[in-house]
Structure formats: C-alpha cells, structure tokens
Image: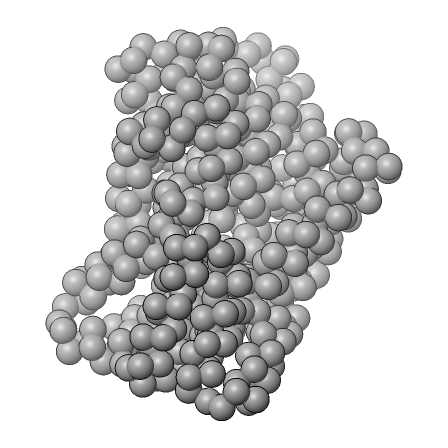
Length: 431
C-alpha cells in the first residue's frame, strides 16, 4: 500500500510541477497508480469506468445549466445594474467604492455561481473606476478577488453541488441554505477591512443618491435580484429540485438578457453556448478524473488510515479540525476547488463525522476554506483574473491581500468552531 500511495503522490506532484493541466495530472497519476496496483488491462478499464461513473449523476446536470445562466448574465447587463444598486446602498460610506465592489460581487456571484465570472464582470467595471477615483490598484484588485469568492457560498453554487456528490448525497437544498450566513459574514468582514483601510488612506466618499434616483435604480435591478428568489425560493418551497431550478435559471436569464434588457443579441447565443460547453467540459473532466483518484484512495484504505492516524494523534476536536483546516489551506494553494472537494471529501469526512461534525457543516467549512485558495498563488484562478484586469502582478497585490486573508481565515475559524452559523438556517427550514 505504501508504494502505491508513493507512486500516486510523486507522479501527481511531478506532473503539477511540469505545468500539466490539473485534470490530466489527476488522471495520469491515477492510471499509473492503478497500473502499479493492478495488472495493465483491468487498470485502464477501471480508470475509464470510474470516470464514467463519476459524471453519471442527475445532480450534475445542474452544473452546465448554472454555467450557461452565469454566461448569459455576465453579458446581459446584470453586473452594471447590480453595481448601481450597490452604490445606492453603500456608496456614500467611507471607501464607498470598495464597499460597492464587495456588495456587487456578492450579488453577482450569488446569481452567476462563479467566482471567476464575478471577478471578470464586477472587476471589469469597478477596478478602473476605483483607480480613477484615487484608490490604489492593488487594493482595488484585492477587494475584487476576495469578494468574488462569496458567490461560491451564497447559492446557487456549482461547487456545493459537487460536494453533495462527493459526500454521498448531502441535500443540495440544505447546502444552498447553509451557505448564506457564512457567505454574508465573509462579505461583512471584507467591508470592515475596506472601511479601516479607506479611513487610514483617506479614500474618497461617494456621492449620496437622491431618493427618486435610488428608487429608479432599485426598480431596474429588481429583475436581476429576483433570480435568486425564484431559484432558492422554489427549491425551499419544494416546487422544483436544484437540477430543475438550474434549467429555470437559464430560461429566466435568457428572458432577462435578450428580451427585457436587450443586451444579448440572438446572434451572440451560439458563442455563449460554445463558452458554456468549453467550461462544462473542463469541469466534467475534472470530476471524472477526480472520481478515479477518489476510488484508488478508497481502494488503498487511505481515508480510514488517515482517520485512524488523526484520532490516534490527539483526542482534541479543536486540534483535529485545526489540522484539517491547515491541510486544506495548503491544498487550496495548488489545487483547483472542484478536484480538491472530490478528492479530500472522502478522506476527511469520516474523520469529522467521528468528531460529531455533520456532513452539512463540514461541506460549508471546506468550501469556505478552499475559497481562500482561489485568491492564493500559485494556482489561484481568481487571483490571476483580478491581476490581469488591474494590470498588476501577484507580487504587487500580495501585501494588499494580507488583511483580507486575515478576515477570511477569521470567519473560517468561526464557521469551523461554531456550527450554529452553518446549521441555523437549514434547521429553520426543516433540513
């Protein structure tokens, strides 16, 4: 067993070091390990079977639909309207544009379900405006990068659907509801940090909107905000499942972007569909190869051995959860969120359940932890997008990111050690 694990880890690390795409690194490392463990014929067949089985799930149908909905909203004028609405709410506070950035990213991220989409859409508008108003470009990029990850906690969220699959069927609706409070806490924490920095650096205060103008902007943003109400409200009320909700989100986004706002032309739909297919293919390949790696880990009893080792190391629930969080923080710096959830959920879930942690609580804790990794080099996809928009370097933005990292880690600790934050809303709605 030790040799097969060594083959898996070494081959995976070497492939990553050679800049092989993460999905191929996972697939090749899994295949090499199976060739070492099993004979060549069954090994290759098993990898193919596990990849096919990994994506053969009704719940995963929601992912391409939510991706398509996000693409439609990204090009349908939704971001601009949400930014205008956020200005009405918080634009007049110290560092108002930074608060607008955070709030708009939370709104758009929750609607699109994609941190990268939120970074591109909100950052593309807000970073140039903030720079023009005298904000430091690294600060502007840091706000955008960290705030965009809140959309992975505030539903609808594709990564929560992936976790539901990896955990063996935790209710997607319960996960969606559970993500609200932690996501809002992260957003409030980022606003708090932005306020302190804005006061210290004396960043400008935005103009206060008139009541009439504020009402007009709010009415213009209502159709965009209604998507969350329709999708989540329908799931909670039992009108439709999360998968059916994703299809409804597409229909609503299409109607909003093409008919109501008229910012997406019919001629643009083939390009949007193509981008959706490309993104879906990447996600599904990651899920397939990660499912294969999860199987070989289970075949070698890795989860059980790690569980036994951690519990033998200490009986302290606090220390074990701290160790798991530290390991996930390290994993998040070099692995994308989807494969990390699929690979490490089967490893750590048995450990936390022995400690009395529910799979629902652990799922939100894990996703929040890995959100920090999206903002962290060397593989932070959201970080790279933010740096590209702000025209800055990772070295330049790192110092500005530190206080935002600190507040995200603080919220992570609160979510980890105070289960009520995660579980209160699901319990309130009967989950």
